[in-house]
Length: 375
Image (cartoon, rainbow, N blue to C red; front, side, top):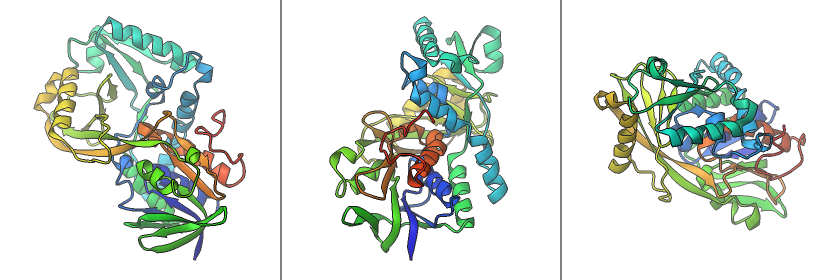
């Protein structure tokens, strides 16, 4: 059997691309060396925070901030996506319009935050400063050492494992094949064209191949495409943990400089995340867990009484330029979507749309990281 499309990688990026193309009528097969969302996608807290993340990619001219435009555009897709998956599959990705709080610890941090807001331009107009009794009412239990916080009502979050399960169930219901525990070993080519993959389960032939294998993407591409076409991706370990009651009665995301807390629908809090360049080591360490707990307790001292549920880790695929690589490669019918770092969940819908349009010929065949982010 020859599929129309093979997608390497069962994370949220790969599943979203498969979802976009199967809805175009293509016969799609997804391969994952482990299980769906067993990598960075399953380890993520699910924050959808384009304004907060845009500060990392900011430009002095907000009109030139493509990350902000892409993030906002991608965020706008999530509510309808969550509703569709819930209706189609019965799996609710737990999309929450929670808002986000950005506490500041001193005057310098406040000035830095204000400068960042200025770079956001009109997109940051809804962000407000909160302090005193209003802050304690909004964030009960927040450390009294924190003088204030900025509140953005726009930011949201989802449960990435549930989002992945919903996408996978929807794909299967539309006839797509998802093979778990099947590793892509080598790209098959005939001349300058790609014709499929050699896998741990045998040959898989297809008219087109998309490599969305996160931090493992370069290893698959390097033997077949020019060095310039291979994204310079390094794994960055993120350790993360879950706490449960007793917890402060906080609803929105609390996103500080070195830690975040994401209250989930079941009453738990997700606390993350470390950023460690330790190669492909996915271990949870005592040092990492202790560091996260220390930082979280500095925000909310009462967390010392919270119940510890579990801790886990994932490897974020971080591209050297800071931007994802999405688009065509030097080989006909071989495409790449990788290097999203800590924004894979946020950017998944827009990545899938952009790559769908490249594959179906609605956009130029490009490997530009942002694929004409002007939309």
